[in-house]
Length: 262
Image (cartoon, rainbow, N blue to C red; front, side):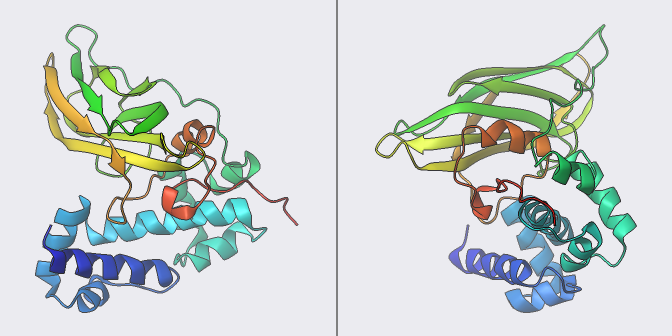
């Protein structure tokens, strides 16, 4: 990515993070990036994989998750603090993205039971997606979660999912027809410093899946999560990764343990 574009997109994302409660428009973001609105939207999508509006919404929900677990603020106050004028709209978007309501997410301390079974494709002619996951030889991971989602944001229930214990071959079965993005998330530690863990990610797509397709040439490479990568919203991913990722810093995408409500 061009350094000038990288700097502009980084500047916009940092500005969004600092002003989540404000009514931020695409014009505001383009002005911060110092590009025309059309050009800014194009380069932002190229850098992040999603539109500026979708990225903004994901950042707001990520911050809401953090506030639900680390403060005793009401759901209404949190929704307002992250930029929603309607608690109903906030709750609906939170539920569809995270998988549970804001109240349930707080009640469970962000630790959710296993998700329902993934959507099943046509049993007569199911599609399968196969590939291989790799990462740097100097890293070690205990668990990698892969899922097929409708876009570059890990939210809602994946149409197919798989779990690996580390690098190696993977297979996602019973994949329905459609256009999907393959996303991988893992807790990775350095061989030199096993106590330090970091969220690693990988993405591939869009993948056009047709009935009976046997796709087997995907080569995923895990890398450290960057500011350009959309937040991980699905609560079940938090649950799966938190057991191996003690670093609860927001940039790692893992929320801290809940405080007792007042």
